[in-house]
Length: 144
Image 1 (cartoon, helix red, strand yellow):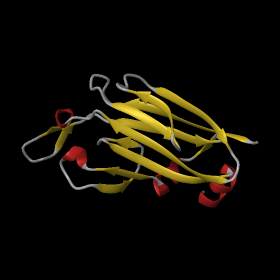
Image 2 (tube, rainbow, N blue to C red):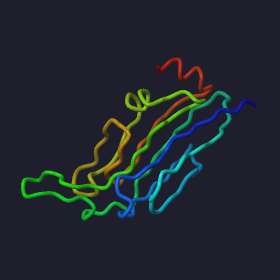
Image 3 (cartoon, rainbow, N blue to C red):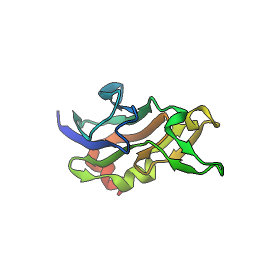
Image 4 (cartoon, rainbow, N blue to C red):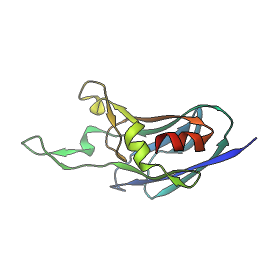
């Protein structure tokens, strides 16, 4: 049975705000931090046999007071989490993530549920989902 690797970096824009992050690979939670206060590198090894998979990043613990808005409804300060250096088999997947991942959220309960493209930053409680298939090299070739 062949193995492949996934890794990424999780970071925060404001260490004082207790934003949390979970990372799921299929139905297995591979990372859970209630308050991200420093950068974390996530490394995960998985079976590379033929199959369908889902990688999920879940932002949690965001409250309305973590976003400051002026009288013109413009954001003047905010707390967010970042996901960067996303790699499968040491191959950068940033562009693939931008093209294929979906960020589902409801503006922290202030708006209708929505799905957006994901550009590396999570500012609302919600889930970024990337569905992919293995063998990973074939999927990478098809999507690069």
